[in-house]
Length: 581
Ligand code: C2E
Ligand code: CA
Ligand code: CA
Image (cartoon, rainbow, N blue to C red; front, side):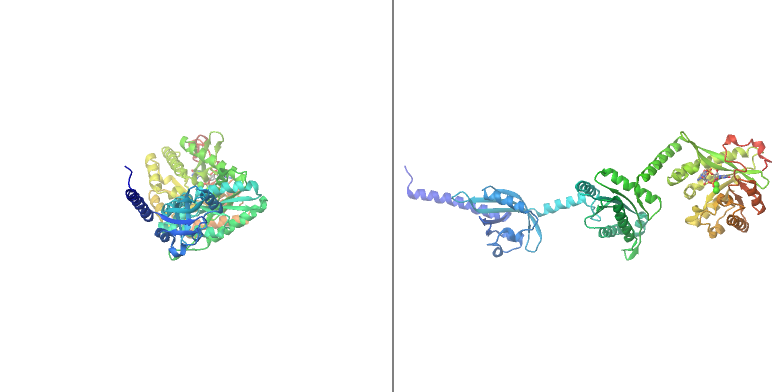
């Protein structure tokens, strides 16, 4: 049986009710969870939901009749929108992420689907825009990208981004004719500044430094923080002529040095710093690794020369630094394989009798033969190797003193050893000396420690205490190379010294040079006032010895009395007594 008209109508109505209900539910769901706008075929807004108004900050009335240009952030290119329009106008769904702007001007991000609804002729008549707010995750993404490329403390580009910039600079130099410079900047003694200010304020200072650096260069140049207190600057578009580029770079380097020495206002006070800069010029041929290494080499040299220095990289510097590195490596081996030995130079009295010796270090280099300290002592001192070598000298010299002490013909001999500043300042020094004396059973009264003036540039009271302590054991102290440093009379008065050694540079020209002669006379007079002995170093001729004798200098050291010798070369011990000039 066919259904009646009424039955059919009722059935249709109930189906329509279901569809309507589903549509209403869909609309409610959409309104609750999505940001929706409906536009006509020209993009004019004909409907928006509450969520759209909320996120955009515009009222419904303000939006209706307008286009999405109202909320355009300017973030996307024209091409982006062209592509969007060509997709939807051809009846396809467009999906993507859009950055919009609220009425207040703030940016927000939405994940968007635009669904076209076509009319009878098959072309779209309406578009439904369904958006989801993704601002938070977008911001997190931006933040993560920032963290990957920017220093979190100073917000300057980090090492990674900086390397990219060098890469870009090298590429653009291939088509454009110019030269770039790379400047490595290191803050002198930042550790001390940091300790003085406290860690947090040290960070604050780093930010101020970063900001000042940024302001001191052109916007097209880059300043980055490599970590710690090390900054780097990339100067682009310097002249294509190398000499002109160098002048330009030097000019900027000088400017940076100057602005860095101006005070920084940090925790209510003015803080002053200096910087060391190493820099290099490069063109598109240079390899990135080499550029950074070159600037690093130059910085190393700048630091090495003392604070507040600037060094330009050149090939001569490269050779120099490589030589130094080789020397350091050789010295490490020398320490490990014990390639050192002591030579002994006689110290004679007015009668020409040898009263003792000075122990002088020699390096038995496997290829270069015997090397004197001029070729390596500075490197030993720069590294802490001097502590190990110095300790060995101490032990060896004490053993030798002990051997001499066992023979009546040599028991009177003294032995002087050179102590570098670093060694004397080391906290273990006193105990090392005592240990060496105990182990060897040497007589401390026969031991002289020779110190140079540079040892006393720091807290002198502490050093005096150390000296006094060792003097109680019977050890005596000489001031070596006197006259070559600041020779401040103030400390000469205070130091518990037994002997002054006149540097050979003054002795060399006596008695012919009136200035040197006057200086030697002065030193003798000073020593007399302070009741100290005087040894004249570098006495090579009888004229020098006679003259020194005539003005009251009674102890000598120099080739006239004997060169530094190995133990085997020393005159037979029995001959020592009574040996004459
Ligand atoms: P120094 O302590 O002033 O030692 C004297 C230097 O003058 C020695 O050089 C010696 O060979 C040289 N000399 C001695 N008499 C004459 C002379 O008549 N004419 C000339 N032209 N030179 C003379 P050397 O052995 O090359 O030592 C150089 C420096 O190395 C020493 O100067 C000393 O400062 C340092 N040194 C040597 N041994 C040691 C050591 O064991 N430890 C430390 N820390 N430094 C050492
Ligand atoms: Ca000496
Ligand atoms: Ca000397």
